[in-house]
Image 1 (cartoon, rainbow, N blue to C red):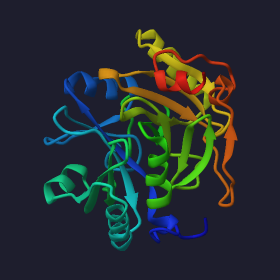
Image 2: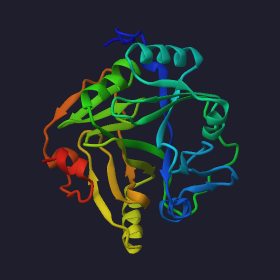
Image 3: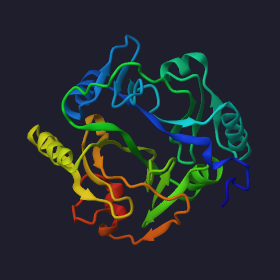
Image 4: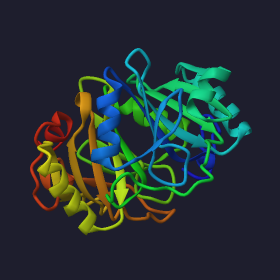
Length: 296
């Protein structure tokens, strides 16, 4: 493809990047304690929501009631781009609606298009997400540098690939078996699609400043009897070192470091459906069926 996608005319630069994750939880206070005390995110004082910072943005994690939907926030380059994306989605038969003022307020954005991919995962395409005028202070010294990426479960991988690449303009960086790495900016990927028998957020990744921070995080969560699910390991496609561990209510979190940049003319590569394609260090995955199946 060139600078524009042929079917809908959506420019590749419509999407700026990943900006937040909303997680629906049944028990908000234990989940909030985990986000601050274990992950090391900074709580945001707000009477209306449970918000957490990881960088200069106003928030990158929001805990919402179980009656709401978990979603991933993606920043769009401008109003005209949002309008074009809305038209392209409707033309392709995807469910999309404009957020009302209260929904925008809850997300701390100026405007939003709430959509569902082919699997039913909720995606918020947003304009002008709020930045914070205050310096970021982590709740503990975890070395967090910011929200790094999200893994999504996919019921229908081909249709979800069309949703992200042909319609929204994300680029496929590589495949590992059927696992699909999608980039929104210069980093190898911000989203990864994993074939699954259900929809949902598979994991949320936060970048950390060094390999030492990964290992310190490993000892920290292990010392608090939190189950390590995968890692420490290294993805051969992206170069990132990762540690994935169990979070509240079935959610998975990870620390990552070393995610490489990709040249604009990078051609997607196919890695084999083998465990070494997902972790070249040989770390076995336990408790994440999608990653285990992907490497069978």
